[in-house]
Image (cartoon, rainbow, N blue to C red):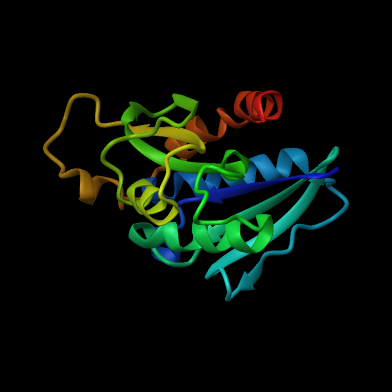
Length: 192
């Protein structure tokens, strides 16, 4: 029987956010898919209205990966998570912990330094609007969190966090984040 995994990358739609720190999840998802995909088959993102997200699918071994970039903006990411689980995994909201382990949420984390990450089950940041939305909409926190460090302030905390996460990363910061993708790809394949 084929296992279907849902990778939900948190971020904000729109060109002004493409390389923002808040979109670290979207960037990492692109790099992971690049590593796992057949290079001869181009990835095609489709706008799925029933989920309110961009969706692409790839096959990795006996697993189908459904990759989603919600178009709901960060604070409403949980709506896309709920719709995706119901549509792709026949998830029952009355039994919230069933099939949720097949959900992997990639997101920025201001509590971690740039260049660090944590892959945890059932344990994510306490103060993240996108993650809070996912937890509220699913009624559970029992899914995988890929926490991507974005803090590069090096002790200078005079920029409010809500401003800092929406700022664009420079090329060096993006490169530092991308360097995590090899190790993360291997760790995810091993754990899930």
